[in-house]
Image (cartoon, rainbow, N blue to C red):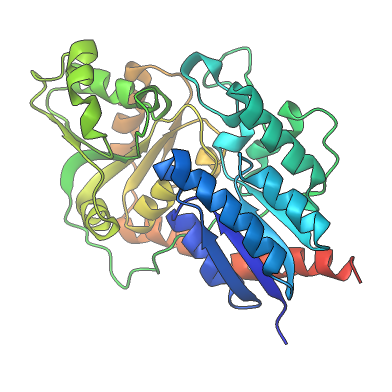
Length: 357
């Protein structure tokens, strides 16, 4: 009989949906959605209900927690108190600290405390890229900016493992060769500061440098539009289209029509949007950050300085590559799959379950 697991998910992100599919291949999985994006009482109620669920999940052998955040510490503690193993999945913002624009759980004392101690108490930490364990961000700071839980959490001795993400969408039978000459970027902006973390300010600069380039950014919070105009004076940029978040299916259609996808972020893990864009056949251009260079590989261009001019040079280089969309798409299907992640998760979780026997 398949062992029972309880998965705690603060959001309904596509990469968590991938894990739900992957884990159900080998385990009897129950999921609890905390609605963290609603914040306040909704998130607090979700955490309280989470504790009840863990307490009453008598047959569950392990508790899996996505992201080391406020909810992770009570989840891991309750798992330990009820004799269950615990696994914390590290995905990005829980492995970095950027006080300059308030990004990362370690920027706030209580939030950082919860993250650090959840990681220390858990039985296993799974990251989607080595950079989330230990790395230096040379793109953000030429002297190196420390990233990764092993760098930020002193005395951390919990076992760690790297298992790459997989795209939610399946390989496409055919990828369109006829594409619009546009630059696409996708990423949420729940906080205004995310404009900088996602590198959208570089794209604003790019639009000024090259009025002939059509640039589309999807994921801009409508609440920030007036502030964006005040800070960047975007109304005169006729080649820049800012879109609010769109349904996943619509985003994929735009990816299938776009020539180049850019990921100019300051901080990332292994960005799912970049993976999906490549699967859709876009030529990738990305910053030299975390898992971005590994994803792009030989099928696009990585730039190393946080300047619009450097981004423009990388885009011009990408347009010179002799790569067809099918080749770019195949580079993802051959390296990343749900079945591969399912197999590696089975082995990792199975090992900690065996250790408790």
